[in-house]
Amino acid sequence: MAEEVSLHRRVMRALMGRRSAIGRFRSSPECFRALACAMVPLFASLPSEAQEWKRDLRLDVSTIISDNPLLRRRGSETSDITLRTSPSIGLKRDTGRLRFDGRYSPVVVGYLNDTREESLFNLLNAQGTYEVSDRRAYVDGRALINQTFLSPFGSQPSEFATSSLNRTEVRTISLSPYLKGPLSGGGQYLLRNDNSYTTFTSRTVVDITSHRFAGQVNGPTGNALLWSGDASYGITSYGSGSNLVNQSASARLSLNLDPEFVPYVTGGYEYNEFFLAKFSGPRYGGGFRWQPSPRTIVDMGAENRYFGTSFNVDVSYRTRLSLWQLRAYRNDRISQQGGFGAEAVSTREYLSNLLRSRFPDENQRETEVNRLMTTGLLPETLSARSAFSSPRVLLVEAFEPSVALNGLRNTIVLGYFWRKTTPLSSNPGIGTTDVFNVVNGFQQQGVSVSWTHQVTERTSFVAGLDQFETRSILSTTALPARLKTDQSVMRFFVTHQLTPDTTATAGLRFTRVSTDNSSASGFDSRERAIQFTVAHQFF
Image 1 (cartoon, rainbow, N blue to C red):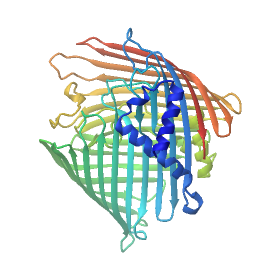
Image 2 (image 1 turned 90 degrees about the horizontal axis):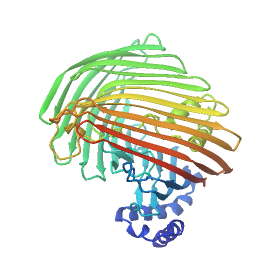
Image 3 (image 1 turned 30 degrees about the vertical axis):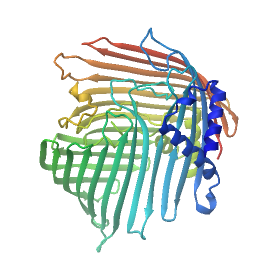
Image 4 (image 1 turned 90 degrees about the vertical axis):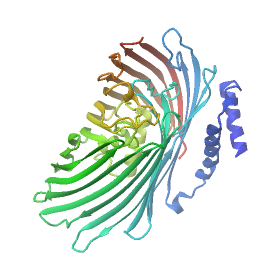
């Protein structure tokens, strides 16, 4: 392992031309780098056919020439040349008792002129299910590592080579044993215990521990009137501070006369204890699921809750060359663990649904999705960045339409979002980062656009824009300050397929961040960068 790390250091020194940037490694990046170097040969030698594993290994190397990689305010810019290296290791299995899908993509960033220390950013998304006993007992496991941001009013660059003190790493591991099986008379039962633990690299955010116990019973499916019932108890702890407790029990009746249109009603009771405040009372509502064709699905529902009316709208319409989706919701968010802020739409999942008609075979569809993600330099999520950190219970209202168009030579992906976030609970007083110490709430809106044009069979042109705005609703400070942040990223790239497994990319990127605070001086910064990338798919 030491030889692997030493070799990687020599390569980095040769490419960067300096020793000082390599000499300042922190212990955590050293461990992750050594682990990655040790895993690659083991990963490559894994007998995929015998063990029914599907392997994937990719390497991206980029050189970025930037006039302001630290996003300093105008007049204080410092230019630098950045080297970014990112291997991507994936494993997948969906046979036997074990189902697993995981991908680890570390990103190593070094700065030639030493504007800052070399950094390591970890990205991991792995989930699996193990069947302990035949169709009775199971265990779900998940591990997530993501790079996100602390404040919605701070800079949130999309490129890892663009530095931001607002960025932090969030790591979540969860384990969920559960039992499910049939009941006499044709029903089914489910008993589940979800446990998760989340940590952050930032010292201003405390760890989160969550436990949830849930049970569900479904009646026979062949009747005209379908019934089900569920109950849950959850507790979430923030560091050594107070706990959040939520309990609920409800029943659901569905009318199963027409398979295309199924209406339902719900009723139950909930009890919530949010630090010093308690909220309890009945919850009731209804909705429907309408599926007039395999390509059209409409899910709508509303419910009376302790904070008022909650609702959820999920509409999807698919043609051979397009996919149209609409998500709108108003609901509470108990913990930061479900996406660390408002949820985002996965671009890969979106493209997979778009291509379902043209590529019925799952493997062929996955190959085409990977090609579009690579040649189009598409972001992993359609929704623009809107992350933040807060230990409170939040009310999130959102409207998120999106569309994807895929022709023979052009692919267009467009996503828009509008969100309003307000706190439902008080601050637990645990000394963690909390934007609601300054504002009573905020609104966000943004758009993400990507256009890929296939100039020739091996060459494509890519243009994209990510733009979003965060605006405070009302300040809680003595001076009624209005906070506002605008951020935008434009990119123009040309990609060329050198070989069936190697792609080269060159292009321009423009970043702008502007803040406005009525009680203090604003902040305006911009970055202009030239980027060259070579990506190789090993297998």
